[in-house]
Length: 126
Image (cartoon, rainbow, N blue to C red):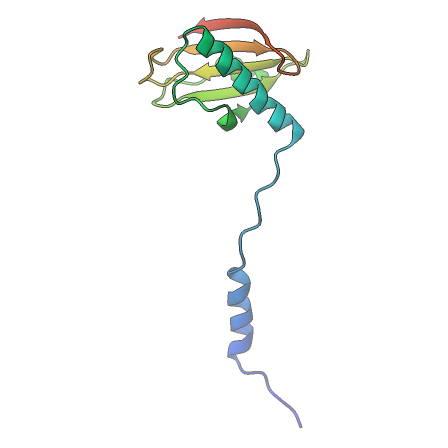
């Protein structure tokens, strides 16, 4: 005796595979975690120097190459943070304040020490 598979069973199997839950997001790498720590250190140092970091979130920092961080970003309506690892293992953190902040779109370039144990220098630009 032969049995045939109803036509809808392969279709049902294909559709149910598409309903699987999304895979969990990848865990951040050690470099990304260190970059976010450096960004938080830079934000703390800037807020102590009266640079308006309202709306800035170190956990949303973007890891980029040093040249891109040094070039910064155009002025926009929200805070942007770029972080780059330099060849001497320090971090360069570019923080562009929002246009609605008290610093009105200013940019700060902060050099953070290798293990985010402090800040080496801060430069301000527009």
